[in-house]
Length: 224
Length: 218
Image 1 (cartoon, rainbow over the protein chains, first blue to last red):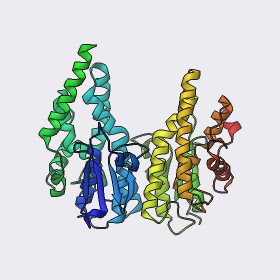
Image 2 (tube, rainbow over the protein chains, first blue to last red; image 1 turned 90 degrees about the horizontal axis):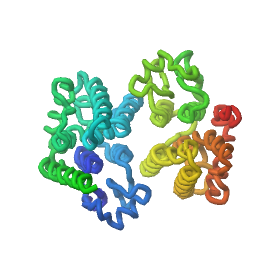
Image 3 (cartoon, rainbow over the protein chains, first blue to last red; image 1 turned 45 degrees about the vertical axis):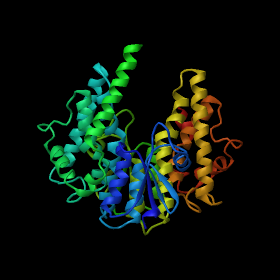
Image 4 (spheres, helix red, strand yellow; image 1 turned 180 degrees about the vertical axis):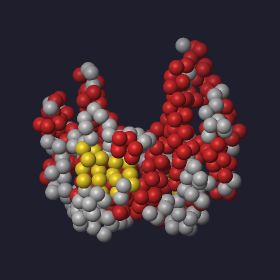
């Protein structure tokens, strides 16, 4: 019953994308509610009063916020195509890398693309360290989850799609094929999945969005 | 449930709230473990090898295999010793999601505001951090009401995931209270949590491992 599962999302958000991807991998029908992040709906603010952010999953009318928390809930509720291993230690490892992606990696990658000068250099160094660790973790594996897409892969979708766009907008290169062959191969494999492609925002749209944002920031700086 | 010699080891340091978390979890599950106290100011070879990414404590070594990140270790302990002691995460999937949500909130948002009080260099900055910390505790008070369902802990009758996440900071909260004269777990502002704090610290799985305020202040 599609009406049981709803996702509050924003078309360009890599975080709400995670939720949609997980649902699609498990064959769960859902309805999505598009949020304008500059004008958030009353419902979103009601369902996520603490953070006021997307994504929010609504299941049987009960809201859950925080993308990684939602992924765990999806895994526990719909057993098809598991995204976490059964073994407790392997689960702990998967959770470790998912958190690593959020706590260390995302910030370094994001800030590398939006800062300049020495600050940018520092973030780029951090970003490269993060990519190196992920590269090592992928050794001998098709996906972080092994033979199939798992929670860490879902959490890393930012790298497979958004990063390239941001690199282009910022005029920098981080995901170098020579330095990170495993990660680049992983990106290719990841983007072959139907479930991945079905709800991925169009690259052209993301590019336009981030370029506009960059121009707006430059314009603000120029007028100061 | 006695573990085999050397089977379960925890690398940590007694003052750390993050280390306290797996200690409480292991106690709740009656697991015997060897505590490997790190030397202050120095990281052991074993730590650096076991947690090369962050080089931080705590690290649980179970059959010599490392598990890192405090709340991940807690969840691991819950799963690996599922048949021992009480469940740390609830059985209901929605409630599990709520416990995870609040544990994230406590670490990502609340802890920085509490720590902000200690780091503050001006009275203004201190007051601002305190306001944020109290606002956070009000949210946690509501969460407590919802999750405890009138019982003693966020986990109900027994210590649960959120209890461990928040309770582990109580030692340092007391130090900040002493240093600043501010009451964090205030009976007037958050009455349920004020009582819960005492109850958590007195629990048999906690009291031996909760660092004493005097010792932390040194």
